[in-house]
Amino acid sequence: MSIKNTSKVSIDRIKEQGMKTVFMVAACVSVLAVLLICLFLFASGIPAIGKIGPLEFLFGTEWRPSNDLYGIFPMIVASIYVTGGAILVGVPVALLTSVFMARYCPKKIYRPLKSGIELMAGVPSIVYGFFGLVVMVPMIRETFGGTGTSWLAASLLLGIMILPTIIGPTESALRSVPESYYEGSLALGATKERSIFRVMLPAAKSGILAAVVLGIGRAIGETMAVIMVAGNQARMPQGILKGLRTMTANIVTEMGYATGMHREALIATGVVLFVFILIINLSLSLLNRRAENAN
Image: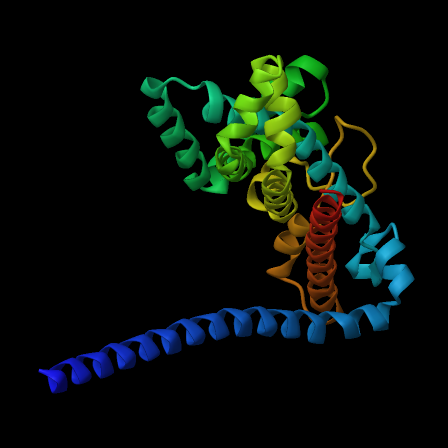
């Protein structure tokens, strides 16, 4: 009997060690993939930035590859404008929707609403682009004039697209806050709304910030939908109703036929985009640390 028990323990240990190895290999593959992407981007992009000139590349206002002009400043500004507009549109709606789902939503409509939001996350970006092109662009054109393909159209469309990205983690963060916080606030005489916005939301701040960063990443990295509604004009943004071109749109539009320095400049644009995302993530980490130290 003891021999059987010993052999069973040995088999369990072997299985456990095997699973640890599998998990470690999976983690190493994930890290290796990220490192290879970084290596490719920086190995291909940094030399191009050096050849063009960092200041001319980052702050040049002319993008004309046929004339060896590779200034991406208009695309950087356009990406910031479109992403900022999407955040202004999407974050308040997503935050209020998350509060409704976590605290107010009746059980009868919770599942259909949750399923609808999850379905939004799975809709291809090209479908959103068609919606923007067929519905939003004509509506903007008839209401405000112009062509309709503009900064406003891109920001509104991206604001809709980032909703499921922000709503899911924000709702989870709100539900993870102990119920005693809410009940204690009510016991002290606060209203339900005040308890939610002054107690629950600050307590879930780290999760909400993470959700917002995910939304920013989705917005700044979106390509197809933006191409269809933004106008694709490689110039400095001239107004909310004028067309513009983001960094991702610039890469996708021209990579198919680019060669030589033109292709290297597009890869270098990807490096700049990667650095943008890195800065956003580092900013989130700093905000979370300050929040933890304050508490």
